[in-house]
Image 1 (cartoon, rainbow, N blue to C red):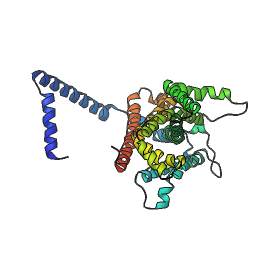
Image 2 (tube, rainbow, N blue to C red):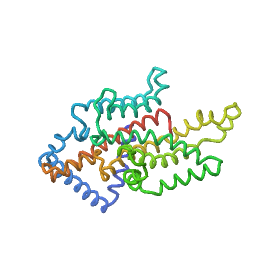
Image 3 (cartoon, one colour):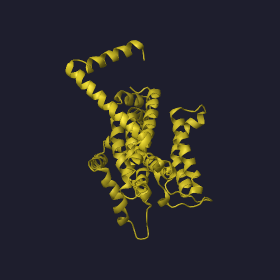
Length: 337
């Protein structure tokens, strides 16, 4: 930032904080209060806190009760996700890799299933052993990947000229937006098994993914619909004059531009989904927050709530900030206003 702009901002802050004698008094009291709170927090952080509750349970926070000798499997999957994320933001030089990034993202789901559940030569692991950050990422990634195409489809259905299709999609979207997420999660965990035939059982993790997908897809549909409405009709008319059919217009004009326009809102949905996975701790899945609660139930760590929740808040903040910064970089590269 230019030095003149910095001086201008400092001058404005001084004018706001020290406008008159009352403002001067309030500003001094506020600064003093913040300083005292900071000193007390710093003193507790250094001298009184017991961070052993965090340091001794790092593997639990990361992997839950996943078998110790098999923890390389979720590590490989998470590293693969990070690599694909970086390649999506900073396009690789190889053209074939750029073209196949979508396939790579879709491939993350079967890769995660194979590495986490096992089979084909790998030791089988039950979903009840999934937990911590690994389960949180699994719920977020799978729900996001499933919800995006469903949301795009719902957005186009709501824009459709067909009465039945338009109204049916509108009813679904409005219904999902009118129901709290926790109710949808209860439906996924407790009611779905009641409707299944005898002998057929769906894994609890996939019931949670199903519920998250149903809920988030409705919000994504509205974000995409906003992007579709922002595209000028002249572009569609120009495409038709060039001989493009309806599917080509959707594929090459409507979907790319609507996704580009809706990117900030979609990023917000992913961050919200990552945070909302903490609700699963109420329903018995020990994701990141659930692991924290189970650790605090251990008599050895009773009463050490502040350390655990500061650690959990820090993990959520770091990951959400990384997601936001990645999206901001992508927005700049795509030159989104």
